[in-house]
Length: 444
Image 1 (cartoon, rainbow, N blue to C red):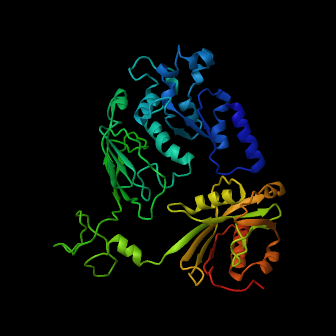
Image 2: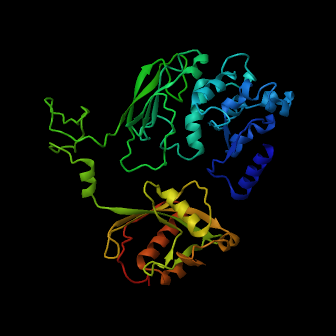
Image 3: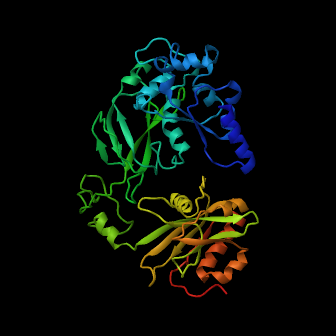
């Protein structure tokens, strides 16, 4: 474990601190001197609570006997890491232990076997709120998706479970016996209780994916998932409304409020009379269409832009690494995936937007274009020389001072490159609003 932390420290010293969210998985036996280094280095401790139960790894089991009794107090040090400011991310590591998160929550809180008995290393237990937070927000944070999932929060995907009891109100021994009454996926699809089948998820979401629209406080005695109770203060829970994209609005009811098929009041444009909304598919068909691209802006260590020569596009001969988004893909992921496919270079992030780009359709391309250019960073000569080009797409990597690119590129392409370069220099993202398809001529 120390060797791995030393490697993170060396990488941080060489490349500078950034929001990398590196993880160490299976943080099981940790020297006390290394506890504080997780928070110091920004390393996420990815841990599997069920593994620390006495029936899995405790006295008499291979793990406990292998590390030696003198190290047992440092086994799965949830509390020590959390108190030192580390970010915990819980997972199951199936099939080593049950996939059921409730069994893991029970173990994190009690350090006991499912059938009870003595706790093993009880000094490293954590409370239920902390355990749920590690299993939800901690895990989404580790994977850079905490902005749109992991909690019932305004603007996040409405993926929820309904549990058959209040975990904060029952004895901790009952946590493992709780069951899921309902699983709500994307605000609408519901799986049956106690479903044993795996939910096939691609991770891709359509533009019409329901999200939590609002969360209103309700003063109760039970904290929300991931919340922390405060002594003497009623803890708010949340209720959520998800956007219903399948509701066709009907004429106003007796109270003058238009309603959807399911009885939920429908929304209308402010100040406009409304008798009926178009169904979503008809409305979507009436909208202008656009392709979306994601790209990365690289320079060498002297801040000279790096571009690839395209063999398939005489209209845009020199290009930033990147490409068109696949169905359901977000622009940052597109930029990273396309760059890896085109150059072999893996860019860990985090995303830093340099420019938003828009272009009208034209004769050469019937759709509008929406693009996002992110900062890929500065590359060494060795990194640039290591590019593994896909010959069916690009045949040359070139590094030039910005002004020398002008004669080699169409007007709008150089304008985009110039704006992106200035955004890197100034720290202010650019808007390139006239990257139209049919502009002719180079930037003389």
